[in-house]
Length: 188
Image (cartoon, rainbow, N blue to C red; front, top):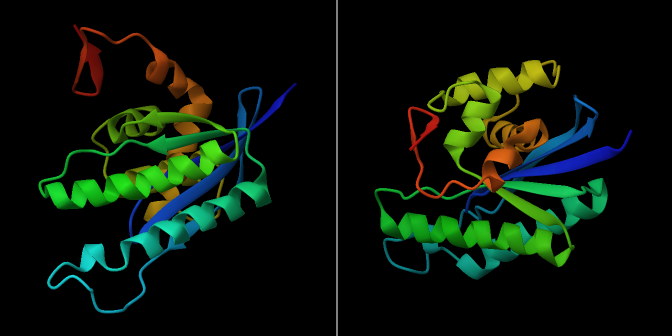
């Protein structure tokens, strides 16, 4: 049986979660997880905008951190959470840049990247596309037989990898033209 090692990524400008799992047949096992922290604690160089604090330096930390994770754990595939549109457009743009750094790390290392919405991930892992963070953490703990629930950013990254391992890539690649998601289900 072939072994597939999947790196899940939950992108964030301050904390980027990562989780690595292995899939052999239908069995998934935990390999590693953690967070890449970019918060420097320094004052913003842009008056009143802490999110833009040293943005290029933060993006480099994400890129370098994910290179290290990829080089250490040698995943075959990458699953990353898609950005949702936030109330604050500036925050959405900044999150998109963090996500871009994460995708860049994967493609520079010649890895295929699958993308999933939070709704798809929660539906695949918890069975409810509107599950709370604590529910995701608990299901990740159970599915991977962990002694304790992982921290939220790591849990979200592991959940993204689990979604991909359990065929979530099927929904991600399925022709969905003319359909929309309502209540966690595809509807015409």
